[in-house]
Length: 264
Image (cartoon, rainbow, N blue to C red; front, side, top):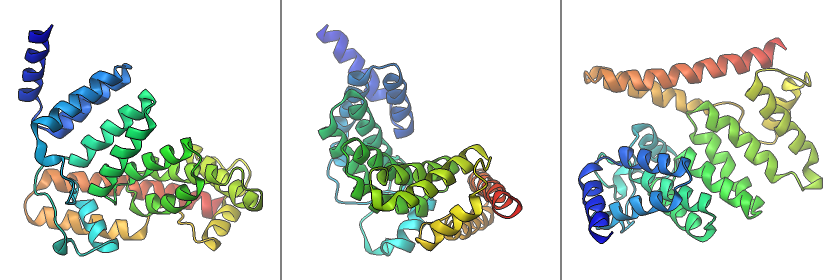
């Protein structure tokens, strides 16, 4: 058994030089309920790359998030960043998720916070943090984090889910019952594309009056257009197309939302 484990570890060491591949393999193990194997896979990788254990830097595998950090948090040139292609925050995010599904809340929180420290503008990491807070009834923390998810989202699924997450944080707050109702109605309308209560205009008005972002952050469209132009100019057609695809989906979502908002 010892030799077999050593051979397996050596195979993994040689196999995973890409964090996306590592995270995908861990996700497959996790999906099949093999949480311990997923955790072991990532911990072995970190043991083999001890430089990734000292979290005194930021890292952004996606240029969108690097610009978001620069716009909303701090001048990117004034902070320490790790220059590598690996999506390092994804490794810690995947590790946290595996611990969470295993039921180890303490380690789930630990690794989520590391992932968030590495990349504080990742909407998916913030959403997972909110889900963790939801599981331990930290509703005030959700109210603090959810607006950032909306601000940093460039994926409609994550954006839509942030409204549901925020709504649940008000579920037991009798003084905010109206806000809860509008959030839930808005979430269900944009999730299904159907205005069941004929209330979308009222919902949007109420949310905007309470300074809750409706739809994508307008700044995100500008960031994507800038990246498309930059990568096209540099002859990087594959990455330019990647940003074009994101922008297209955002515009389609916005178009659908406006149809509900103005035509209902």
